[in-house]
Image (cartoon, rainbow, N blue to C red; front, side):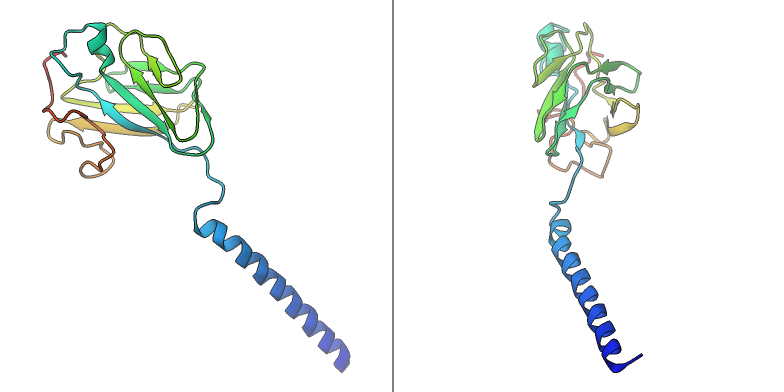
Length: 182
């Protein structure tokens, strides 16, 4: 190999390394700041399992019991055939609902007219136990997306971490568990 061939090979290698470094540096900021591609992030964001009042089982009281589902991602999510269930096996199935990015929908227990912000299970009895229960959200492939558990010992604890993280899981109105309507 002649001296000029060696010099040319070194220049080509240096150029290739410089190009790779530039491509890597350009991609790094997008990944580091979290602005890269993100999928939908659907979760149970709040639960009001203890309806205010005395548990009269009126439709109004039933609709004060709800679970809020939030899509904190940018892209909308089709919730068709997703399910929300309690520990006793009562299941609500979502139909024809697209949850936009950065939005929420409340799933009420009683009877009502579905909108993009509120849907209704059309039940005549309470679903969520004030003392102890678990809300489980599953996607259309029956995979668990999110779960929240509460009990009398950990009132307001969402079951995913120790203590309430301030997002409003559990009893939003600050009273102790139970009004005896279960």
